[in-house]
Length: 546
Ligand code: ISL
Ligand code: CA
Image (cartoon, rainbow, N blue to C red; front, top):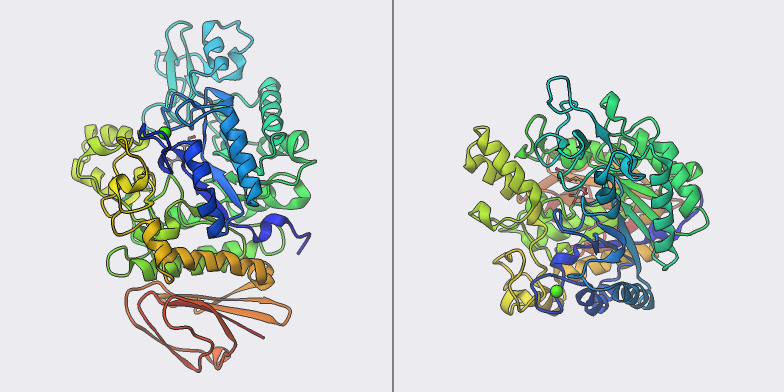
């Protein structure tokens, strides 16, 4: 193992500002709201906050469409409040990761406004423009991730511009050195404010080669990242994490091998997309297969053992709630939420906790499409139902995998609107907040919250949890995810029952008679076992031994 970094034993907490805490009763979460909850996050023990975008934005995609990278959206607050958040967090040993969204801007960004004015504008080449095909149709067949063509016609100039997300999110042209310089300057401006680093939105797309129809992993991608590192990150001790849906262990090593000077780590999505249909994607979920999941995790743990670093996560603002997807939010909500936390936090890598995960928040099921706000769910619902998919099928897809599952407001207590806002929330709450909320969790010593708190604390004290070698166990078992970590003479064994059934395990000889110190469990504490284990539904525990 090469050099140790401060972020190796850190835990990151993701905040989706719109849905975290509203301080001025307009129904939208804001920076002042976040500041008022920093003590809570310090109590949880996290070291960094990944803040989803708070920059100025017309909010076509809730802030992932930025119109000014160096200002704050009025509904979230002011730049002064942003600086206050950085300072107040620092007092609590918490650093802020800004969300760097530079694959595209908003169509209201001054660069795009200028670019549209004329083909001769110095900003024209900040974006990607092409002529129509011979028959007047878009330049090629590329689709937008949010539905429709990736090309939008601009009547004024008679050209099309490229957008991989909504048409209000035109893609930047990263082949233009001026774009590179603008982004580097902006990154340094934020770094100079003392932030702890960046989460980089769809960063694997910035090397796209539009004319070759290459979208992810373009030939210049790593050169661009090395250049970015050189211009901004090199002299600073910060954390960077790239969102890379295309990552394989091979490319992840390119991004995160410290010797290459690109990023600290990337988010890989193989354990997410394994439940997506190969054709219909996330709108047609496939059942979760634990054996396949274990193969994926073991592959990543093993491949990045010596070069590169893993990020560990179950969910985020684009994904369904962990306990709903991988656990049992009905019968075993608390047990399975804790099991998932243990299974993830004992792996090698940096764990990410998405707001509400630490209290076991669940997916939401609105009956009407009108109650949804997410641009992706809405666009795809309309596109696919118009193409003949039944509304019931699409609603089922949205209930399982729609992005608003993660975006319903945070549950602080059991009062009106869960203490999120006294106004009308921008998105309806999950009706289960009277039962599942922070106040209730803090009153219960055995709540999901305190389980997370303990896991976060354990990482600070057990080097084997952070640096130990990963060894899979019981790989073919259909219900149990178990693994060992070892560092010198220090050993850890972690056992997780991913099912709502009792499991009787006859252990192979090499696993007989382990005895040591139970570190965490979600039923009675376990310090040892013999040659047989009887596991409770969703039981999970870790034992340290030498
Ligand atoms: O969730 C997704 C996978 O089906 C996509 O909707 C998502 O757009 C993709 O994960 C990329 O996400 C990032 O960039 C988008 C933004 O909408 C997402 O919120 C962000 O995480 C465009 O900036
Ligand atoms: Ca507000």
